[in-house]
Image 1 (cartoon, rainbow, N blue to C red):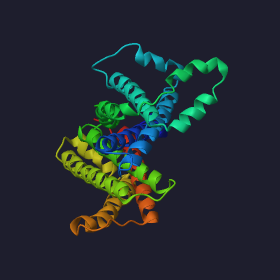
Image 2 (image 1 turned 90 degrees about the vertical axis):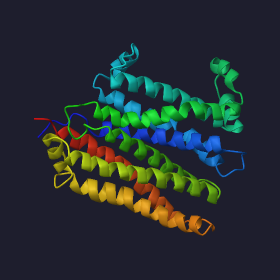
Image 3 (image 1 turned 135 degrees about the horizontal axis):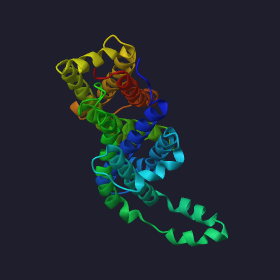
Length: 319
């Protein structure tokens, strides 16, 4: 059996990085579509912006501790190497983290800012200079951050695909699969946040998130299918690596828990909830508990996708 060097810390890092990308993407899109603060996209934009910096920060912290000698992580930022996916990813994550933090600050309510700066000790009083309203920067920051969010979502798959000695990862389809999974996970996290936040969710909010999630889940599924076909038509080592999910140790997790419960089931539920309203031009209806379960399934599927690819990929190798 191959040595497993990347464990659950890496799985969690890939998932959390993708989750932040998905949150920012949905937030940025909603901010650009926003016409006024009473529109159906306001809370999507605000919640997504406020949440986006958190998962990637936790994920990067896990990655640093997985390095072994964690205190040397700063060396990644001493130079930039175009040919190194690790170097490109490190700088991309840094840039995305900065933009997402700035965007989150632009969405912080005034009362939160006043309370925070009032509580600062005297020696930090100079920080009160940034106690300003940056709401005018919301859309410009969304425009800047959207391609970065897509880049982070893709990078979580590129990081695996760059290891050419692992046939299970040896295709660009992995990066595309991870991207759509990340965007879908962001929508699911926002759905959970909105339905459990104060005040009843607006129909327009959930309808927009459902439509986005349906698109991302469908695209993710139509990447899984070509991935399987590509593997079966590829060299022998790639075909053999697919046995890990075609009768091997990851078969049940991949087909039942990821593809079945984490992708196709929530996709079917969301289509069932959304299509009647679109086809009949009627009112969108939702069930709070079913909506919550669907979102949890999507998030679980996103995590399991990365679990399968990280562990199965390390068990595959060219002979």
